[in-house]
Image (cartoon, rainbow, N blue to C red; front, side, top):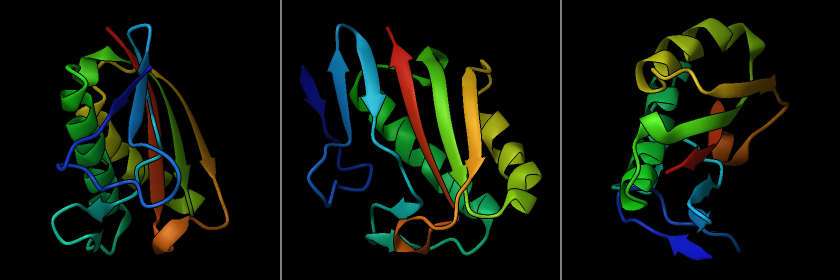
Length: 123
């Protein structure tokens, strides 16, 4: 197993890593919209938070030598199902290869986040 870490994405603040690669497959931890420069969520709406989640994932993919084109599966969590369309409008800009996906509404996310995305990618 290879642990992936980049300063371009929020540091793992609990007992987990940003991502792990096993046998050429990348598994990321869920990314919320923490801006790694300031260390907190800056965006206040779902579109801005989804954008930051995707940027964080992009940085992790880059650190693993991959791109969004390597993504095979995502799992997305949103606090308000009413935000589904706005979330998708941002999501589709990054995940143009249309990987398999699950998207569920949840009651709460850490740090008051409105969305969280995790992914699996393969070389």
